[in-house]
Image 1 (cartoon, rainbow, N blue to C red):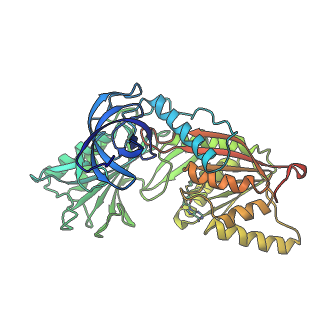
Image 2 (cartoon, rainbow, N blue to C red; image 1 turned 30 degrees about the vertical axis):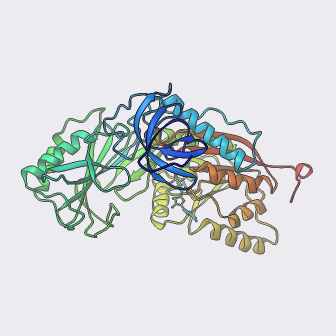
Image 3 (tube, rainbow, N blue to C red; image 1 turned 45 degrees about the horizontal axis):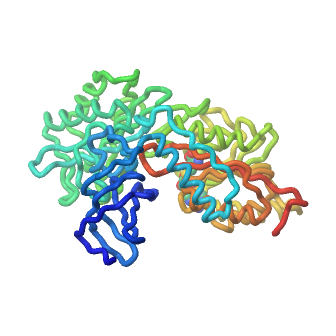
Length: 472
Ligand code: SAH
């Protein structure tokens, strides 16, 4: 059957990609259709027809999937963020479990591993502690604050985001009325004119502290004292309080949201928050986990899997601002963290200092270079191979370089804890480790990004004993 562009076809959605696009088949030809849910019977109009697969637009739902729900956010379809919002939360979690299981089996050859239900959130809304709203104008010149429509740069007005904090809407309304009152122009990307580009809001969920940061195409904000006063007087829900009002200067013609320079308008140049017992200081530019509640669960599991007694030497590779390192340090003799971004390492060192943690040491550089170099030097110095008790890795989506995995194996840790944000590369790396003397003991998914297709996975590997050790 020849599939033609602009034709309508009736299909049943059988699968979902990680980006949340439904997949149905027309005589074996795969059609990807946004805004659908597994189990929907739909009419889709083909918008792009390649040889073996194509893309379609949802025209009509003939029979909704039993997993389909009414997305609670009115902007759900237009906004590119919450691709799974039309699916019940329970079925989102089940989808994520199957995704992990499928990747481990298909890519890692790990067909025997049990993948338990993904650990979900108690409430899958309002979980993000950070939001960045673009500011612009509509065709009639009215100020719009909201979100970019999926894969575009047109702003859909949205003063509230259901996965964002409940303080956001009130703060945005105050900023908009300040702009109207003082005739402050929103930024226009095309002409690179206007002042206000983005509003960044960060909230410390444990402390209630709120940071408001206006990203501006200029040096100063007209009547900034007035805005500070208005924000201070704004009644905020859930015991939140404004603790920091800042400007971030970004005069570049770029898609990058934040510039490198910040100016304090009021309060502290940072807010503080806790994950477990560890305190973090967060500035506009610092990296910080956006879902601290689930992060606590994820890193708590990593800590359990590490089975520390207080005597261990531990490496935390891809350590970021040291969230896992500081968690581990409470129960280890010594923790070494490695991270490529120098500012993150500065934050990690400061986080260690403000918590009085002294048994951590951080290195800046590529894990796949730092660890092999360290191993070679230390092994030569001591005249015996350098070892570690536990190695934790938390790499970005591309996973670990094979040179790093090879060095990890040489260090013979009793346990490896692998935290992953992409179960496909996790599966690839697990294949290498299981072929080189390690065995997968446990796998657990944790949902950090409800309503989106992302899932985090934590995996425990342990070293096989010499007599179990085949293949090396
Ligand atoms: N556990 C960290 C977050 C890990 S996210 C925390 O809680 O802060 C992955 C990290 O890997 C990012 O901070 C990224 O900057 C870093 N990274 C990316 N490539 C790297 C590499 N080749 N070597 C070391 N770190 C790298």
